[in-house]
Length: 451
Image (cartoon, rainbow, N blue to C red):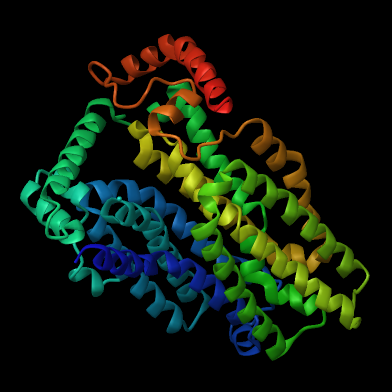
């Protein structure tokens, strides 16, 4: 099996994360359909269209927050299968919708499913590699979860299926021992409630970083374009089938750029530089888009319309080599081991999906009322908040170990368990060690920069 099986597993599992991109790609065409608008007696810039998209993101908020519980209780594989089953129910309700209420319920259920899978798929991939409903019957449970639930023989069998090449028995034994030791350390120092994430200063700081990078991702305006790009094309004089065709091409450009960036550049350029490049580049593209639209209000100037499409596509490409992949990597890297599951669930649910819910609801109304001026909302936020925060506050985590990242945030190195595990002891210990760890971090960072 080995590498080929790993690739098959990771590729199949990734279809779970694919569902959100598929939804936005489909809905941008659906809401532009005259038949759809006529059936629901609405128009493309109405609050109803906003509700159809925002309820999906609202459901995802619930799903992502639930993901931390279901993964620990039922396992990674079962959580993904639950999400896939829920997605089928949501899709059936949307396809068979005879009224707005049925459509909205279907959207909420589909969002719930995507929220679950947006949490569980990356974890499953990471823990199996060093996901849907039917296929996962033949795919294994995460070996890490099996060890965590004391199913050691099954875990060893999965590890051998994933990594055994006929002669690496010692490596398999070492890998199993490392997984067991890591889980034991996590149990000894793990947070027992959600509230401790906000009480311990270092954990609160890292949770803030993870949540903010997700907020900044949404404030690029990428999902607004994803759902409502046909409205933007209409403003450029591109309507009907031409707008649907352009939207289809748009939906292909981003993933290609994303793939190239992840394979060839991500670990070379770090985390902060792509985020800064993305914020600056997207801001420039949005300002140019607004300027073009202001000079082409009727969409009759073909050269300007082509330029407008170019800058919309530019946002997708720039996002795909910056916030698209880096926001998820940065969030997972800076989250401390003690709160990793719940911290990622909070950052994803609140920072990503809750903000997405807001802009999914208001954007069609804003595009109808403000037109090209709406682009300045995102450009202004990037200039006033995102760029200064990334430049002055965010840490560079590329190729740093968990221990080194702990020191960057003024915390003791991971793997040093607290005695007792109570929240008060965790909090007081964190306070006592802030000064010492901060000094250690300063020395460590200086040493890194002089290499």
